[in-house]
Length: 242
Image (cartoon, rainbow, N blue to C red):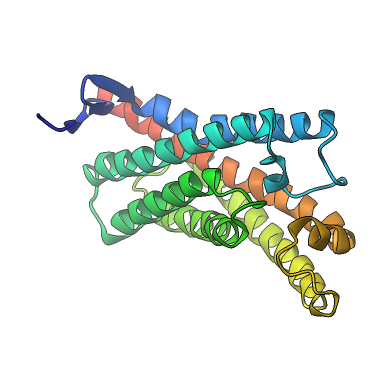
């Protein structure tokens, strides 16, 4: 038995007999989550499963149709992100190899890996693992964007401007979200709600009214970061064809 052979190919990667183009990988990494997350949230609302509004994105990972959309979509996105971060390192290292590019690749692999695990670790049954992986996606995802911003050689100007905007948006949103939740959760010990996710969320809904919108903005910021990578990759692909 021969294992599956993975190798770099022109403008993409081959896994066995399957060829995945760089364009497919980068579009999947940002367009799929940008589609499935709002879709899962809308389904969650229309099915009458939401406990309140606004709610955290991960609350849409609820048993039912929304869970299938959420889990499958983000699992595929996580794998695509890992492959794309690797391909980005391969391609841009041909222009100028650097430690920053390698660190960027590691951040991308780590972000995609945590996204994949998070897609299966729903907050209702695996809260601790979900919180850890979601935090890693947000935090290391921002580090990935920042490191890549400085690491990508001859970066596309449109991509750079978009990346700066998305990084600032992500950082501000993350601080607002974190502070709103931390301040609310600090006073919950007196209620004895440990282990009851729904009751805990209901109790701090006043904070979620702020934190959820900050999370939505953070999500948009990270999607825009991934989209900005596409701008650099398109320019790189076009130049390699000339």
